[in-house]
Every structure is written in C-alpha cells, then in structure tokens.
Amino acid sequence: MCYDVLQHSGLLTLARRLSSGGVILCYHNVVAATDAGASDTLGLHMPLPTFERQMRWLAANYDVVPLAELVDKFSRGESLRGAAAVTFDDAYGGVFDHAWPVLQALNLAATVFVIAEAPTQDEGFWWDDPEVLRAYSPAQHQRWLTADCGDRGTIVNALPAARRPRQPPVWCRPATWQAITEAARSGLQLGVHSATHRSLPALKEGELRREVVESRDVISRHTGVTPEFFAYPYGLWDDRVREAVRSAGYRAAFTLEDGQHGGAADRWTVPRVSVPAHIDDAAFQAWTSGLNLRQWLVA
Image (cartoon, rainbow, N blue to C red):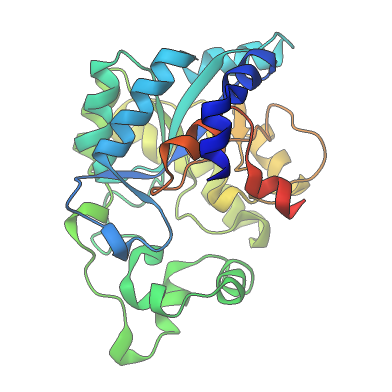
C-alpha cells in the first residue's frame, strides 16, 4: 500500500529525476506464467508477463545501457542519472527461452552471469529442490553458506536419504551451452558467476582460484567469449575475495544490495538491486528509483 501511495503521489518520478546514480537490476529466472507459482518460495522465478511489463516500464523511464557502458561511466566518476542495466545470475534456461526474446524485441541490452559448471549437469541448483526448501530457514540458510560453503554436494548429502533432491522441473534447470552460445552471438553479454556457486569467502586459495579464474576459462572455451565481469555468488565477498577478482583481471565485479558489504563501493564491489519474482509494479518502480522501504525499515 505504501508503494501505491508513492506511485500515485508523483514521488517516484521526482526521485528518479533527483537521483544522480544509475541502477543495475539483478534477475534470476523468467518462466512461463503457468510455471513456478507458489512453489517459488525464494522468489527467483519471475513470470514472463511480469518481466515483460517491468522491461516496458524500464525502457520508457530509463536509458537502458550495456553493463560495460555503465561501468565505464562509474569508473570515470560521471553522472549515471537515468541510466539502468539489466543482469541475470545463474544462467537459467528461462533467461534464454523467455527473457532474451523480450529484451531483443525492446532493443534492450543485458548481461547474464554464468555458473561455469552448471550447463553440463542435470541435477539443477540445490536451492530449487522442494526438499531443500522444506528444510529452509534463515538460520539454516546461513549455515549452508558458512559451514557448508554453499556447496551442493555437502548440503544435499546432509538431507535424510528419503528426502534427497529429485530431478528439478524443466523450468528451473540451467541453460545448455548451445543456448548460451547462440544468445551470446545474438548480442547477450556473458559474465562469470563462479564455477560452482559456492560461498567464496569460505573457500581456501586453491578453491577460490577455481571459482574466479578457471571458471572464466571454461566459459570462454565453450562459447568463444572471454567475460570481463564477475558477480559474487549470493552477493558475498570480503577483501580477500575482492582482491582475487581484481587480480584476475576482471574489469568490474558485482554484489547484491542484501549481500555482505564492506566499505564504499568501487569497480569490484558494484551493488545491484535484486528483484524478487513476485514484486508488484508499484514496489518495483519504487525499488528501481531507490526507494526501498524494506531497507529503510531494517536500517
């Protein structure tokens, strides 16, 4: 209701005009309207009609630019007023089947951050399995990302044998290398989202190199594209991880607004707005304009 008031009061338009910063939106998956639904308890799988509506509004109200252009302006200290970039984490199949055709029709640029080892695996992502979601709680999630390092095998093997994850539905599986490569050839930009989507601050040096450096080599080998940008899994980073990404030669790296932050943002800790799958239009427009009431209340 508060967002509806903001929307109809004209404050959102004023906030966009006054803000000197741009916005980078982070999505995960886009699915047919009949998929996901109530089973999407983490809000990762946005219905296609919602996504298309958001992109039409974004195109009408922002200058949607390639991520590289926004980063260049950010690096030079230029104003980002009115600029927006669209990104996706994980490289779900729905990004290529549903989101990319919408973006192409609207002539909007986008970047998808690929988990390098996901396209060759059939089991899907651990956080989508119904049995994992059944065991979910904020405290449990924190343990999965710290004690278990966000490692799929460790998390799955800890479940009772009768409740081990099953094959995920088609709509929440990773894209194939063929789909990723074809989209890259048609203009979709590729970035790196690690090798296995483990929590990077919890890893040892050799494991960290695999996630940051070797993952880029895998993507390049399969697609012919050498990505320039990195997105931290779960938005989590620390000084050691940031330095590993910077030293690896990435032009920039990206966090999430609800991820772990430390110090002022620079090119290797650029924040993004994570867009929940079931956010309504008024809240989406407010968040994009920098008016996230949830963050204010938490603060």
